[in-house]
Image 1 (tube, rainbow, N blue to C red):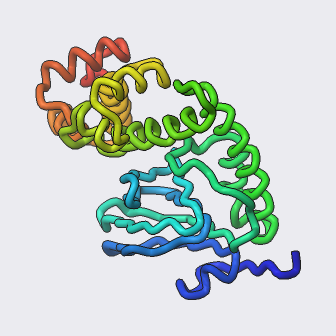
Image 2 (cartoon, helix red, strand yellow):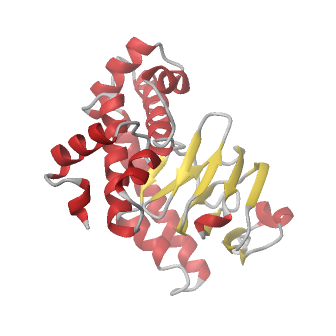
Image 3 (cartoon, rainbow, N blue to C red):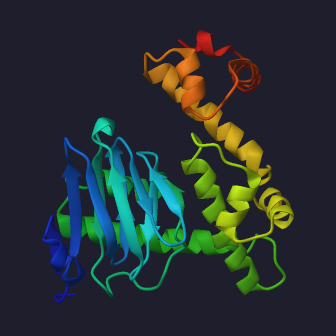
Length: 260
């Protein structure tokens, strides 16, 4: 293990030669364009960051993280208004073996503990803790993939990738006007087949998933900001205040105005 090096905020040119923690908190807009990464984790301690690969578009927030495999090319954007603090581990080639499903993951369990302990333990220990957590996560996701629709294991794994790519699209782009066809295009599956496969995999339809996501974000904004109900309704992608209020009360048992 003596061949492995560890660093904090090295030069971009040196990222492939070490396991590095890239930590940034900027007051202005920040962009990275077409960077080819080593295995890396994308996470923010606060705010949000947008990542885009040739396969998908992802909104990363404190409650989620994104895994990108070695060799993946990505771009990212951070808006100054979001007051974002990024914390992204990059792994030296060979430090963690194998590939992972590139998708958004919930920031929970052993992985969350390892990420949130960064800075409290030696840097090298943090990377070994993260490597162990990634090993467990890969096993969990491979088991989950085998529960997806498909007769053969390879078919189930490919369906897992495609359906999660579409799920992440809906999760990230909730504020936009999106349709089942848009999500199906992201998954590269025909609309009718996608509708059926998504519900089989996740237990709800794509539009039900999108609606729940919008309502959850609205509840968060109602409890954490001073924005008025109408502004929040429109900000999360609803077009009708009446429809939003009715759906919100059905979901949470109270009207939006009563959340404060």
